[in-house]
Length: 182
Image 1 (cartoon, rainbow, N blue to C red):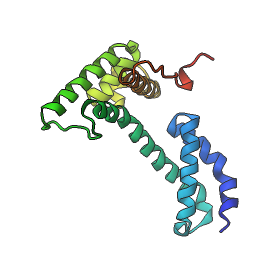
Image 2 (cartoon, rainbow, N blue to C red):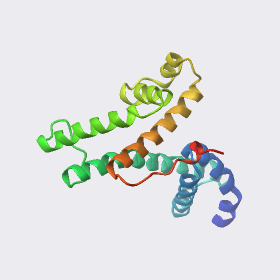
Image 3 (tube, rainbow, N blue to C red):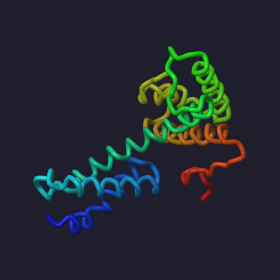
Image 4 (cartoon, rainbow, N blue to C red):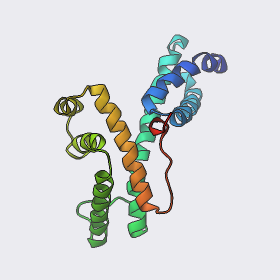
């Protein structure tokens, strides 16, 4: 199997898929590179070259979700590190210092959520805090499921930015591409 030929033939199509999955160009590019590296390392597992594109896309999706999980946890880890000098997120049965850090996180999250536009705050609270199903949130707000997902994506991004700005005062986070004026 000629990996370079396969990669060249399919990388653009997989990149377009990663744009949809990851939500932005930078992550999609990083994910594609990581997926290509993993595919190259495990090329012996591919039995049929006609399945290279879906195989590479599946690897890319897994990498993208791993990136998203890390990004979602990063603000909490940063806050925890500032609060107690460690990188562990305290559990509910943690000691007084860890419980104080959790209380700080709650106050911080509330302050960030209060600063969101209502359309983003509502979706974020229903999905992330009340753990409602996406279909239920869309129905309750009278919007399509696609609109709910779009708002949730923007809300998550804004919450991460808000938490980062609160944690590291004096830094002005840049707006994501999808929120800038065009």
